[in-house]
Image (cartoon, rainbow, N blue to C red; front, side, top):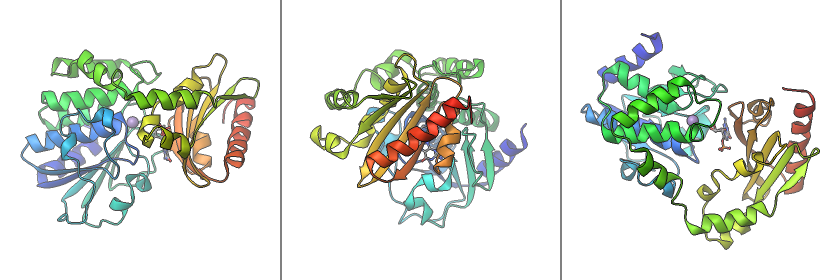
Length: 325
Ligand code: 5GP
Ligand code: MN
């Protein structure tokens, strides 16, 4: 068995009390991997706190265990170990965790190639389509039970991070694990209807506003969508409604990189990048202090909308012209 897995399993055997945590702005892989691991540890008789700085997105509220997610660590006793899943950088775990000293051995389970190995034990597998795949392997190696509730969570992790098995990360291994999870109790249609066919109406109202901002530059190779705070206010919505919008920018014929700029505050933007061709957008995100995968990456940036747009489009143009990098 892999040495790092052995070390993590040793911590599971030895420990009694665990914290399981993932990144801010959590999506399917973050929440699914977190809850899959937390529920499996609980099933094994451990004392487990699943924690997220942000709320679980409404669409993922059906995931078994999501009601158990804590959002404060203030009154928590120390833990024997903490599992951070699907998170490439310590800061992305949020402020609440940064100010918490009782985390014990920090075990970093991730699939971002930009992961900076912030843990005491770092299980970073860039070939994995989702952190959920690594959690699946860990549970199997540790001999922990994959109950139907765990299966639903890990299936959602893999399904969402592969873009419903469309992305290049959809390896035979990803399909095999998803298949096993279906056998163990994950129901594909029930899950798909909850995750993909259950959007609040306000998401479509927001989408229609977002699409009206679509700008094409660099001879149609870059497509940019913008979401402002005003737009979110108009639909009385929160930032998780925006999840997936950037894919519309990438989906335009001829586009090499789709960009979404979401205003978080005054002169403060969250950027999502999605590539279709050879451009590795994780490298561009890293230049701006963020990270991600070759085809999907993100970062935060300060400045006015025009300044931010110009900077990003400038970098992208250079990368597209240069072939890669
Ligand atoms: P999204 O655009 O959906 O927020 O993120 C796309 C990918 O980039 C995800 O794998 C996500 O984890 C990563 N990512 C997004 N924002 C950041 C960021 O600020 N820092 C880092 N390191 N990764 C990010
Ligand atoms: Mn992921």
